[in-house]
Image 1 (cartoon, rainbow, N blue to C red):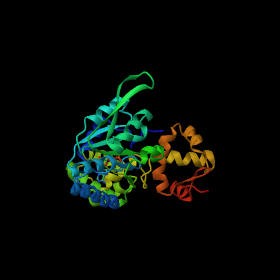
Image 2 (image 1 turned 90 degrees about the vertical axis):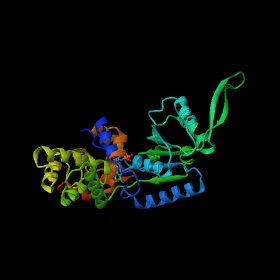
Image 3 (image 1 turned 180 degrees about the horizontal axis):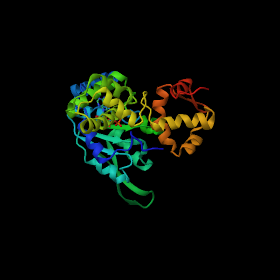
Image 4 (image 1 turned 135 degrees about the horizontal axis):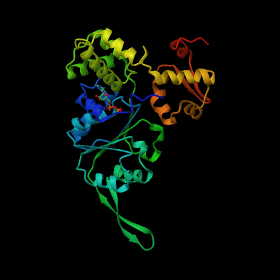
Length: 331
Ligand code: ADP
């Protein structure tokens, strides 16, 4: 399948994203009920002078898990230390991070489902009792010997696209577990409007709506489409993003009216043409598409399911009537 617009992020794109990151709850559009709850938790912790509970955010990529974690840190007036599951290679990597924290710091671990088991185990006493087991030599009878030291009270905020892959003992140690949902069109439109102001580009209201419709309910995609369209508007037009400019770039990028790209259509057409519309198991489908299961389950399917184009059933994936209608096919 083609390069993936949601997960493959270059260094330049990271900088671009960082420049557009909302800094406060007010600038963070959508996820209203989640924001309301978080504001209460943050205010309560501040009023009591206590440390905020550990939080786990889950949901598809690009929906704002990292962004909201940083906003929480800022609202708490806390330092934020960021790492990720794959970046922590040895238990000592996490141990040294934990022992360098100050009281009230926020430790943000992205992709926590990719944490190795032996590293995950260090987190249990750290999260529960703010304790760290430190290796203190070899014991003749029991093998390794360790002593338990206190570490400052901190808040762990973790993000994952795969809530199902988090072990029960880890999951149970989060006081707050919250899902991020896809955004509606108006929320995405507001995000595009705000991003255009930050970038200092002129955009017409109906162009905002057009881009919002095709952004898969995902802020990251909205911002990335805006970037491509802005470049095009600057080079080929007078710099203003009109509906015409937006539509022609989106068509050229092969992003259709629902926001589906070539990969999404290949996914749907494969089920229809090779498997009679399904049901087809994810392993078989992954092989047919030349993709791994994780990409299919975490990147493509959540939006297709949310749009009602595919169903996950016990016996496998099945495309819906809406998918046939969307693809202009009869069945
Ligand atoms: P995730 O961690 O879920 O993959 P990020 O927090 O990195 O997603 O968000 C991706 C991009 O989308 C960021 O550049 C951020 O600016 C933007 N973004 C995400 N959520 C919002 C929101 N609610 N309002 C405005 N911009 C957002």
